[in-house]
Image (cartoon, rainbow, N blue to C red):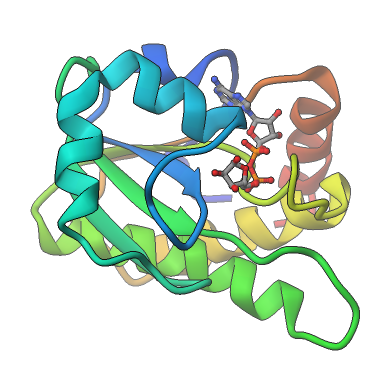
Length: 169
Ligand code: AR6
């Protein structure tokens, strides 16, 4: 695994990085889970800017400022709602790749991800961890602008899934 990848446990809203990633929904107008936590911590300026973005499609990403967060930017991405009959892994992988592309194209050096889709959207945690780490590792293999990518777990199950997955990457 690329040495720039870090696996950590905690609250992503507290992280000092050039960007934290939000597991948003396609409206980009807030919600529960990590999305709610990020909007609460960032303050109303974030929602004002999000209203001007005209939403975001599943697997895509958009960038805003970080407002009252320690992080300078928020990259909002929309993970897939896990279901049969769609390319869940392809869409989840795309969330990570698009977010990293946005970070790199904006000259950012550090970015932190939550476990996209593994809450309300129902993506199996172990499978999501493998898709996430593989996507980040593949991206970093062709990138020399990013210096640090933190995979942030809120709970022990996600943390263990990432640690296990890191042995296979
Ligand atoms: N820091 C880090 N991770 C967190 C935090 C936090 N403060 N809070 C929760 N998590 P979810 P999704 C973890 O449901 O599945 C929202 O309503 C959580 O434990 O936040 O992509 C949006 O508006 C889980 O592992 O996002 C959408 O409608 C992970 O973040 C929908 O939920 C993702 O859980 C998106 O669902």
